[in-house]
Image (cartoon, rainbow over all chains, first blue to last red; front, side):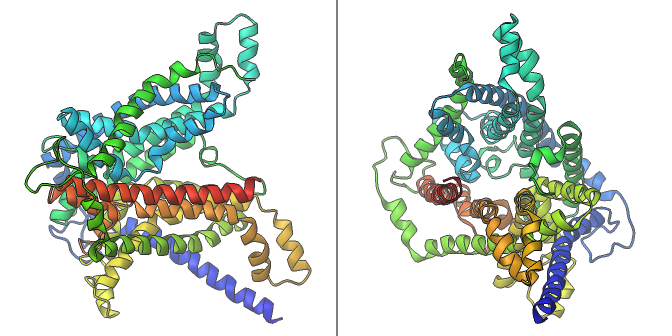
Length: 273
Length: 282
């Protein structure tokens, strides 16, 4: 009997804990969203007495942020294109391999995921300085390709893994060339994987600080770098406004991911649901 | 059988990028970490003599303190993350309707994707010294600028990512546990907590270890979270690398710290994933 009593007690503790954890995850985001619309010209306590868009217009009238935003978008788009190009090719190559080195090569290509990003950034900083590469944008691009490529490789590999090889073989038997068999059979079937790789790569590039902070120069910096340095200087609410916009971007990416791939497929599922 | 034909040329462009932007720089980092540092110069010249000083310096107690702090906060945050994520994942899998499960999963994916900057800023704005909880903290007798609270805040920053990540990792794991096993144990008279402790938890051990591995490697290489929430009082190894570069331009020392961080992270990943594979794939 006491065992059941203990069960009820533990269930209550468990539910309280779940509630607290969800609050811990959600409340800061709600506070930030609310404060972004604060009409007061200073950082005051909750709740804001009136709402306005002043912090948003402050954000957009600040050249420092806008410059960073421009660089970030440009950099993210270019990184996605380049790392998709290299990543899809690598994934297709790895998928075609059958010898024992395949496992090792795959983990080698995915290794930027486990190397601490600051180490990657610092190594690249030293290396590019020795090579004489001083253009800020070029340095950032090198760093962003390396941190985004593993995501495109992994997602494409996952997309390719579900494809029945006999489909391609059938096309080849029926007289298709290797090249057209790839573009007409394999590529469309792997498309969802490639799309989710692109979304992941874009998100990673837009969000990176640890690598970028090593590679920026005075004129070329990304939005996260601009935000983090103004966060350290003065804690003003235009960063809250920027945060709200970054949240909307995240939400948009998730919706695209859901529409194009399906979240359950993107994260995997078990048997007994 | 797959054909290897045409596989290798596909690896060339990406392989070149990896070599030029990743493997060669890492090798260069290793070399740099053995160079003698001469104050005042930016970087070292190719003719600088080799030395072990940069590593010897890391054995002083001031540096060991930073390493210990990084490992301690990371370990506590990872364990707490699992403790919170496991019941959460169980609840999502077993207690929610299909519709609510989809909504919750979407919510957690969004949380995991959330920019680390937004996360950090939101926590600082809510729980930090200038934040909305300021008066509540003072009321409770907690100093928002005390070291203990700052450490707690850095841990909370790590948890804000670890909890959604670990929950999503554990969802599939818990979905693979046959619920009839727990039902059977309870029908035979075991109390629920005992049934879960002796059935659900051991069956999920692989997922738990994998989630722990993600959480711990994420934490020890964390950069933005301790940089903002730590306010210069709590520094992680990553922050130390950055200050070596940005504040005193001691590149060899920064390289040595990077190499140590690299080796620690790699050792943890290799040892843990080998153990996981050995126990469950055999």
